Length: 410
Image (cartoon, rainbow, N blue to C red):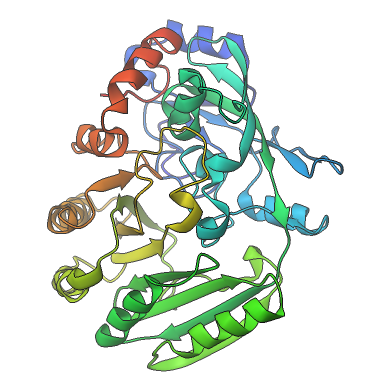
C-alpha cells in the first residue's frame, strides 16, 4: 500500500461490526478502501479506512471430484495458479500474478479468455457482506434459469456493493502454453494485429507501446495437431529483434508484458482500460493516433498497451455486469508520475484523458479493472462500463449499500 501516512486505520477482518462502525464515522472517511492484491491504485488514501484482506483470507480449497476451487479474498492470482498447477488444473488469470480478488470480480480478462471466457464466467458461488452489513451467499443460476439481479450485479460490479470474502469457481485442465515474444516496429504491430483478428480462439495477442514496442502472443496446446497449427501461425508473425518462441507450464511462467525498462517503485500511476471491436480497416489509422499520443507522453513511464478478447468472451457466458461482450481489443492507458509530484500527476492525467478522447471512436467501452471515484471522469467511465444496466445497479446499491460504504455509483 502507498500513501498510508494519513489513513484513519486498517482492518483485517470482515464482519457486521465493521460496517456498523463505518456508518457511525464521518462521511468523508468512506468509501471503505479494500486491498486484496497488489495492483490497485486505491488500496489506500488519506482520510480513509482500509480493509486489508491479504493476511486473514488466504485459504484455497480444491474439490477433487468436481474440479472446483474455493478462493478466499486475500489470495493472489499467482498463488492461485501455482496451487492449481499441483492438481493439474488452471484458471484464466491475467497478465499479472500480483492481482487479487478484484481481478475476478471486475471481469477478469486473460490471455486465455478467448478459449475459456472471462474470469467472472467461471464463478459458481459468491460469499461476503453487502455494504449494509448483511451476509450473503449467492449461487450461479442454472442453465436456462433467469439470473437474479443480485448475481448479475456481483459479477462485474461487486466492488460498488459489498465485500466478497470467498468465491467458488470452475477450473480447466492444465495445458502447456506456447509463448511468442518479440520487439516490433510500427508496421509490424499493424501486421500482428491484422493476423490476430483472424486467429482461432486458442491464440491471443498482447502488446505494449512506450519508448519501444513489445508484443506477446500466447497459445494453449490441446494436442499435437493444434500445436503444429499454433506454431505455424506464430511463425508468420513479424518481428524486429529478440524473438523467442517457447513452451511454458502455466501463466505464472510467462514473461511479463513490459518494455524491459527498470520500474520506478516510487512512481504513482492510474490505469484506464477501454474496450472495442476489431480494428480491421481502421488498423493503421488507430495506430497512427496512438503513435501521436505516445510522442506526447509527459514521461517515459507512461504507455499504452492492449489485450485481445473474442471467442468465448462473446458467447457461452452467464449474465453479468460486463456489458461489452462484443469487444475484441482492450487497450489500456497507463499514466504515471513521481510520488508527491502534483504537477507531474496533472500532466499524466491530462494525457490519459487526451488518449481516451482520441481512442473513444474505436474503443467506446470501458473495463473497470481500476475504478476512479477520486477523479473527475468517474461518472463517464461508469456510464461507458455499465451502459443501461447502470440504472439497475443504482437501485440494487440503494437497497444493499444505502450509506455508500463502498464506492459510489455516481
